[in-house]
Amino acid sequence: MGKIHLISQPEILLVDDTPEHIEAAVSVLRENNFRVRIATKGNTALKLIKQHQPDLILLDIYMPEMDGFEICEIIKSNSDFSSIPVIFLTASNDEESIKKGFALGAQDYVVKPFNISELLARVNTHIKLKQQTQSLREANRELDSFCYSVSHDLKAPLLSISKLIEYLASDYLDKLDSEGQELINNIREKSMEVINIIDHLLEFSKMSEMQMQTEVIHLEQLFHKVYDELIKLQPKRQIKFNVKHLPDIKGDPVMIRLLVLNILSNALKYTRNRKKAIIEVTSSESESEYIISVRDNGVGFDMRYASRLFGVFQRLHSQNEFEGSGVGLAICQKILKRHHGKAWMIGEVDKGATFYFSFPKT
Image (cartoon, rainbow, N blue to C red):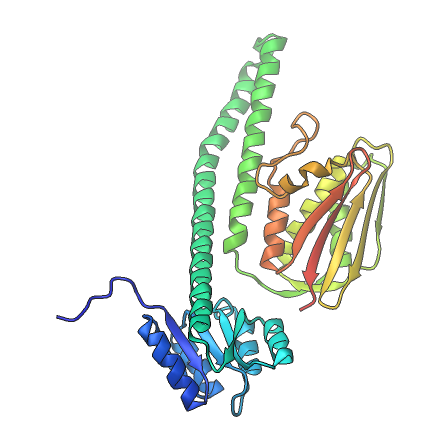
């Protein structure tokens, strides 16, 4: 009876057109419990990847018809395949090719002719990293799903409690003394507070599952539109709102609107104790990304606690000072991660805060 392999063998796609290199690599990899498929042309490699995704790709730079750079660019630009680690096979003095490979999204390189221990070390490292990344993604998906299920299941009974409190208030409020009336009002406020938190949790968990619909978004118009909607709820406030030229970006319109809504809601909330609030939105850019900043003259925060800002339920101000669920900034960060951007903040106590977010140009 033959050996039974209980642990599945990682599969490697070797893309190379040199027989001696193929023979050397295949011999070493198969001896070390890897399954190997071989493609001697770029088009063949792409067909094999579509048929069955490998765990790792060893990719020669110099290939006929389609070189390794083109193959790598096609792989990394396809969201279905972009997480497959690519290790370039290159000549020892080929520094420019190595730089270009990393720029296109390759994870590593191995110099030819192969040093066996180096080839195995790099392959094993990137296989392990891919498995760990996949496990983390699955854990995050499960956590999001759990978060959604719990939030969804809690919302219905809480809405029922809220409705019962309303009935209680309408039927018995005038029969209670001032302490009893205050107690009912407190219960009403707290139940609405919990419902709002659950609504934010549902939004947060949906950010991972939501299908992306990409279109051109006129960011400057969007900031003005969202601000006009929010200020209608606070018509008596004196606010200087200034938006300097903002770029057009490509993104999901629902998510980006929620991002802007959260940013401006925060700026309005934390400036409400100012006689004259100031909110300024500006942008700058680098070769690869736009950076948008939203500055306010509100209460600010202590930078020692900046690392807590984007965590779920993390708050730097008490509920008595400023209401909130502690989920809004976490939603912002999640939206930006879906768009390959990121958010950060700087601030100073009683001197305002600036919310920054980066957004890729492509």
